Amino acid sequence: MFPKVHAGTEMAMEGNGDRTKTMGNWEKRIPIFAQKMKTYPGLLCKTMWKVGHDDPRRVIHAFKVGLSLTLVSLLYLMEPLFKGIGNNAIWAVMTVVVVLEFTAGATLCKGLNRGFGTLLAGSLAFIFKYIATETSSVFRAVFIGASIFLIGSAATYLRFFPYIKKNYDYGVVIFLLTFNLITVSSYRTNNVLKIAHDRFFTIAIGCGVCLLMSLLIFPNWSGEELHNSTVLKLEGLAKSIEACVNEYFVDPNIEETEKQPSEDPIYEGYKAVLDSKSKDEALALYASWEPRHSRYCHRFPWQRYVKLGGVLRHFGYTVVALHGCLRTEIPTPQSVRNLFKDPCNRLAAEISKVLMELANSIRRHRHCSPEILSDHLHEALQDLNAAIKSQPRLFLGSNKNQATNMLALAAAQASQKHEKAPGVSLSSVKTDSSALMEWKSRRTTSDSKEAERKVLRPQLSKIAITSLEFSEALPFAAFASLLVEMVAKLDNVIEEVEELGRAACYKEYQPCDEVVVTCGRKKISISQNNVQTDGAD
Figure (tube, rainbow, N blue to C red):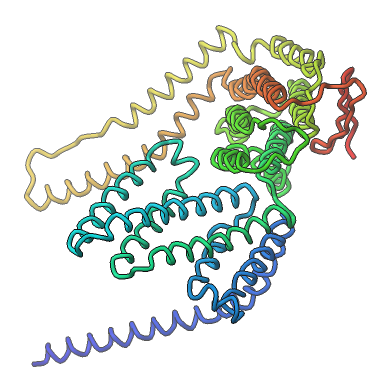
């Protein structure tokens, strides 16, 4: 009996201990939760301000949506309008919620798809209703079921076509929804024509309000946004390259806290380029639906912007690799970097100037300068090549030093093998208990040696790599080769920009065209004859 009482007492004590621990956790969490609730309003206001400050058009669009919903709600709130339309007025509210988008092209695409889908579905449902009118109820049910199966299967299969999927997928979905609603409800009601008419009429009202708000009241054009985003991507790449090269040659003695803010422009500059594929394709699609509001009447080549975005993404991959050189595991000594600082900075500045000139040509709808690849870029490339050739031992090394390094590598490998050799010493006669104890001790020793080898292996690998003399310059060689690769890829970017200019009928470059753009902390004056760089502001 005593053991049972003792066991029950232990269980009760454990239960009390768990409840006490839970109460203690809640007492700790409540002040943390209260502190978060105090900071939440300020954080919410800060986020709302940031979203509106980054793009004021978002605030305008929010008011446009609110005004549109208020206008279509009058169909319900005003008695004369409600008597004429009835409960179908809710379709106008739903249309505004679904159709009204941020840009005019997106609103046009969804609005026209919804309107034509509804019209086609209503017309087809009325035809089927007319065919099955003079038949028995059984035949009507079979006919309606068969028509729903055939139309549903055919419309769904059409959605897999690339062209339909890209341009009219939303319209096909609305067609399926409207056709099934009208066809199924027509089996129990006889006024199917009135149902189709009322729904089309209310959807037309909703689409009309959306188009009015999108096209006439502070319109946001998808084509203009695609154009501006392409300009910003070129400028972001230019700033990322210059900031990355400047960061690479910063003195490592500077504290990490002082270096951290300068990394944000590097990442933010190329992040917009790498993440732009889906956005560019969507904007190009919506821009093709927009009216030609420019002074040119021809069809604008929006797909050229998508191709240019693809070329910029390939260029951006090189910038990402250049940024990765800042985080290499075997950094090049600062003394070696300083030998090539000036030619690298000059080459990066020339690459940035070319990208800024391309951005400026797209912004102003004109062709870029015929001398965009100026002699300054070629001279900077030659200076870097000469600086590398002037230090051959950093990249090649001498035979004597290579032999010494190989000896050091062999010694490191020999010491590693020596540590791996286990010592074995067993007595000839052991009892069962002594054998078990020794087996446990050997197992513990082998586990500790294995853990030590796991920690030691990467260290020995680094020692073996850093013992090679030319490894000090290998990371810089990768860095320099990426800069040269950017110069080679500039031809592809320039060619794509020129193709865009020819397709979009850009105006010709004039010798008097000159613009001052800001790249980092420098002012770049771009003209036909020369490219000049002023000092820091």
